Length: 172
Image (tube, helix red, strand yellow):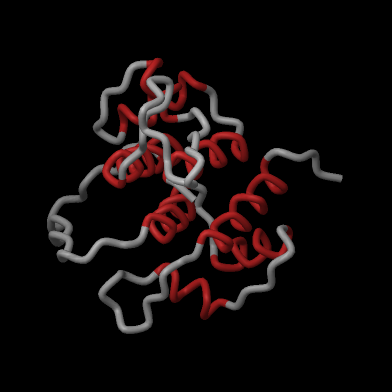
């Protein structure tokens, strides 16, 4: 699953408008035009060998930094700008090891939507997947932690499916 797929599916699940997408990228520190955002939100095309076709000028690949900027902006968009408190130290510089895109995605969406672990378990359950607190904890850890587990595409797809059920479909 590409980073473009993650953004396309999240946008659908939470019914995010194009203008909001542009604003979210801006809050994440990335100035993109409406055309560029629409290119990112275009479903990627594959050639006959199953490789991503980058020759299409209506498609723009979303790299890790673009995804991270969007997710950081999404947190600010949903929760507001965080003001530093007096005496608060600056966040430590990240180590050289980066989270996998799926882990980053789940972590940041969890923070943006203020989800608890129990909320996440319910979201996965809605999608038909039973997970434990330990599994969620392993995915939410830092990449250099000994109990860190890289999140697979299927797990991420189920998370987005659960978000769609919870936030988009009418509740009874």
